Length: 346
Image (cartoon, rainbow, N blue to C red; front, top):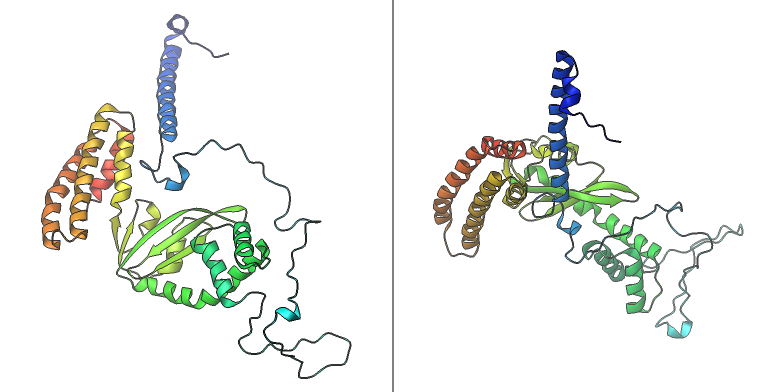
């Protein structure tokens, strides 16, 4: 049962005990209010007012039942149906060419001859292999769905394990090109960098994205710490990093904080529940929308770069004035957000 300390109980205690009880009661009430505020924020977090990925909120999503982790090992289970491709009958072949080994060890072992130049080494040709990688990587289809699609479309049997094999073949073929692009990252004048949660086998991982002017590099790492930046950028990078306000991006060079993320930060101020802070967040969001309108005019060719800079002058002054006002807010979280933005307004 919850213990209730009334003023009548406190009055019966010595003066020193009364002071301690009232001090503890005040601290408990303050902590309880803080817990309620944090719980309210957690419940109200959406992709529109936080860094949650848009994929976490589907407009028609239903609550999913809890999933229990399977104790089975990954891959095929004992007794599962065998997948194999039957040999094509001779009458369905366009041409027959006998291929024999150059020499035989005469020891009873089976010796395979080398295939002629241009003949695929596996069960699938280069176009089918590339198409499989396109489905699984670019179009993000599951291995099982990809196998079913290939079997239906081409009329050739395919299982999830074969799609993995073909995807690995494409990965190995593209590795030199990937490493060549990754090596160019430190020389770029500007990079847009972000990371998002993903899964690697049964564990959690982070998908890092480095976007340059002419190419993008993706990398899966086990952590979101700045060590990934050190691996790809090293000590040679001194360009501009466009990113959100996460601390691991405070690497070196100059920062350009993403205005799409700042727009979410201002929406979080609106959704925070504080009346005065909500009014401040609404004004910041209106100025942000004004900024995006000017940017849209520039991107569409309706105004010049010089005109864009002239329009941004008043926008900058409005934002800085509102952020300075926010540093005096009664909400601790709003004060912290506005202070960080104002101190790094350049």
